[in-house]
Amino acid sequence: MPRLTVGALVAVTLLLSGCQSYQSAPVEPYAIVTLAQEKQFVAPDCPLDQCPQLRVSALEFPKSEMLSRELRRRLIALAPLEDESASTPNVQTTWAGYANAFFDQAERQGSTSESGASEALLEADEYGHHNDLLTLELNSYVYFSGQAHGLPATEFMVIDERSGNTVGLSDMLIEGREAAFERLVTEAHQRWLDENEQDATFAANWPLSQSRNVAPLEDRWVVKFNVYEIAPYAVGQPELEIPLEALRGIAKPRYLDQ
Image 1 (tube, rainbow, N blue to C red):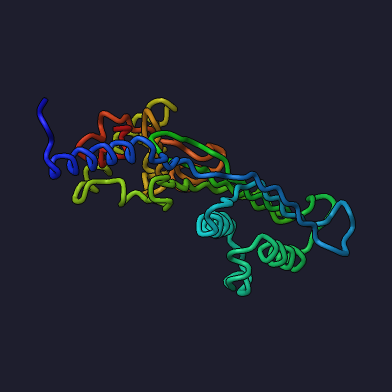
Image 2: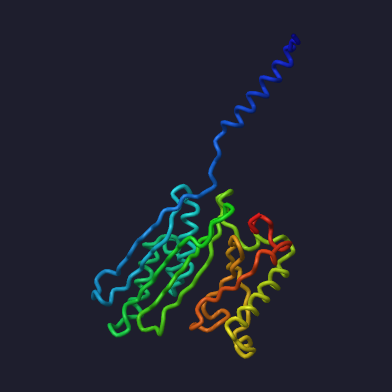
């Protein structure tokens, strides 16, 4: 019967222990935990039907205070205020700080029962989730008493679950392919004009502007614009769609469901 040398025995032992270690190693999940967050703030000392209020329907990340702060900062930035105090860190990063600044501005502008109370709404919802990419849609709506209508705004927040960090358009595009991407956006804009039966006069009055508000979804990319950017208020917030196939060679494979 062949006999193994001491060196061979050591090698076999190391090989087996390596296999066992590999098989038993836990797999760290990529998914980032989120919790719903609901808050409501009402201005004090005002008639009930004229009290300004802020409603928050957002998310927080119990395992990442960095992402929680980033989400709050982005949502609050979507609902800017005129007061100089709005630039203070407390207002920019806390719901209560923003609520107090909003109430101060609402009080200065005044309100009447005919025009309704001032209100602000801050929301965050899941928009897409695939390939360890979590895309949130952040929405704000701000109305001050007496205005003809409130002002909505939207921004995508894309989180790479593998790194735990947010990514932007420049991270998703291959270096040097920005101009090629803008051509795809122009083509998508023309398709949107055709689908909505908008003529050359509309296109001239509401020309395409650059947007970096992009959501990399499983089957397409969405480029979203806020009101008044490429269309009048009544049209809402236009969304342009770019198929994944058109993005190959322009966007990094990581963001093309590969």
